[in-house]
Length: 163
Length: 197
Image (cartoon, rainbow over all chains, first blue to last red; front, side, top):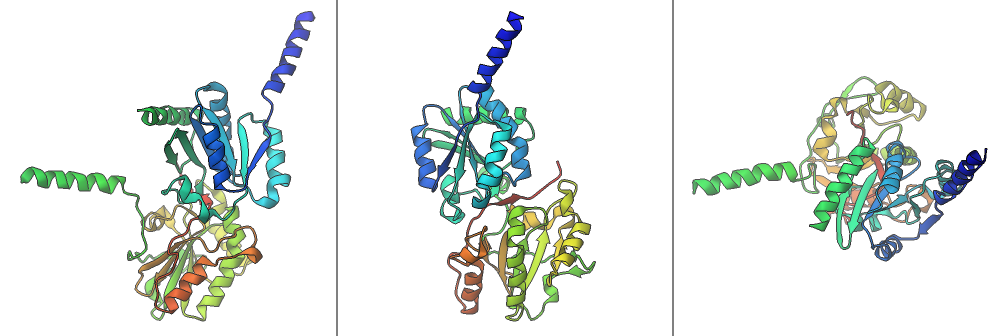
């Protein structure tokens, strides 16, 4: 009985440690960039997504798994949801999913101002993933079919970025 | 000498693999023959008197495309009288995105009373030649099918009343004056084109 209580208590605290993150809002690309600079102690895996983008939503659990299983990278998701759906869709979605990676929201919808600053080859489709190590980056405009595929891509990218 | 020739050939082959495909402004676009929601086949060659073509890769399912649907309908009407032909093409494979089937394209076109051809890129042969990567994705061509503008319709997907820059309309206005559009390329977010794996 006492043993069960211990497990229950542990689970209770575990659920706190894996608590969903607050939503950080970036007003423009410069704010996102300054966040990246401030959090550059380890490589960043930045994923651009939106709740309205079905393939994006499908691959989020792979990013959550990457976040939980790979302590060598910091996973940051950037939502491009519509302004009017932040309260009605984005926040309830994140609350329900309880993802513990960093969740952020990009408010600058003048996309032409900043898409090319992420990567000049990005045409603008999502999902898209950006791996950053110091001042070197790798960008892909594609979805990942599985966690394994994402994990492999991240591993290979880090080797390229470190070399 | 032979070796240089071989190296040049090898480089050419490698570059053709690594270069992103698709048109840049100034390229000549391919014509196509695609089926529209009225079951008829359409080509740009059918429009002998067109001053230009607005080729819009769009679809049923994508929320971004849906946000632009009414604007696309208005553009088709507005520019038809000025001699420009708007052709919408759905590039998605219904096997990957069932909402973008030909039958549902017909249904959507009827509901929204499309006045322009809504074409199905059967076999997904056309969108890769253009280099479309998402919906919506616009290519403005002059009457000789030279690409004059690639990108977004305007700078505000969420609210048509808050648009500051009408990129596509400005590009058409430049063509009317015999000028090159500025900007001639813009970027916006959109849904990736769906391909069956």
